[in-house]
Amino acid sequence: MKYIIEKQDENLKIRDFLRKNKVSSNLLKRLKRLPNGITVNQEHQNVTYVLKEKDVLELNIDDFDDDENEFLVPTDIPIEIIFENDDITVVNKPSNMPTHESLNNRGNSLANALKYRYRDKAYVFRATNRLDKDTSGVVITANNRFYASLLSNKIKNNEVEKAYLAVVSGKLDGNGVINAPIDRVGKSIIKRTVREDGEEAITHYKSLISTSEASLVLLTPKTGRTHQLRVHLSYINHPIIGDYLYGNESAFISRQALHCYKMDVKDVGCFKASLFPDMISLINHYFGEISLDKYLD
Image 1 (tube, rainbow, N blue to C red):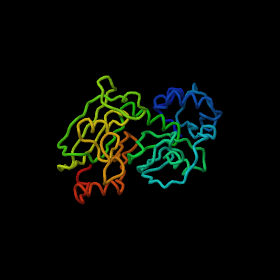
Image 2: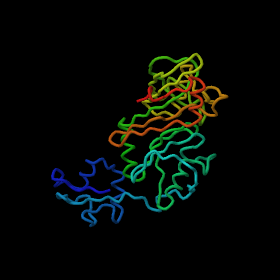
Image 3: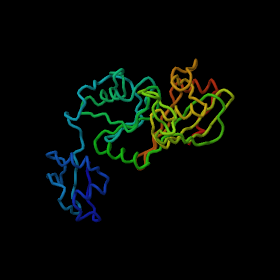
Image 4: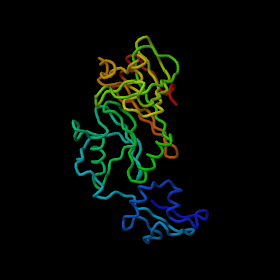
């Protein structure tokens, strides 16, 4: 990462300049330890160096072999790339693909697929958001330490807006807010429920189309609890169709009908993911062959 110092930043110490430019303290500590982590005009400098106008400040934010997870195996799995550059990769994750590997899912995750895509260099998988195995849609990954830190801070500062599409059971009309705290069900590792003593969870919803059988809704979570959308919709008696954990299985789709349609990251970009055929088929079944463009911005 390269900065050309402008007049307004002259006389700042490198440390203060980097803090001003949102470089995290953890990344700064890492850069200080690297032989050429921080250079000015191609010469190594420490963070107390006082910058001058037109100095070229460079940060070595590339990953190294010892950063990698040696147990993550590259796997040739087809994935749809929405956007890609040196800093981020945005993927339209399909269903039946976990974001990360787990005890019962080895070699079939998005992490494995991207490890294969970037197999010719040191690669560390850093997902900004994590979708359930059977939830499809936008996943943003950071391709270096700086962007991992930047995106993490944007989430903490509420500078990332997510929008999901779901097909739910029953007739759900209008707009609304579900404000219901969520916590684990007993000692379950997986299942969640609404509980008074749970963590704050807020979901905004907007009904796009509804019939007596089903509704197509746009969901905007304001918090990020595990299974939040699935739990909240079940809580208001409109479970997501196909959600075996919080509702019922469906004859028309083999997973929960939930898709992360959009992620809008302030000063980074707005990324949208097209629906997969199983969701399109389900929507056609309940609402006919409609054009979603007129319902979505």
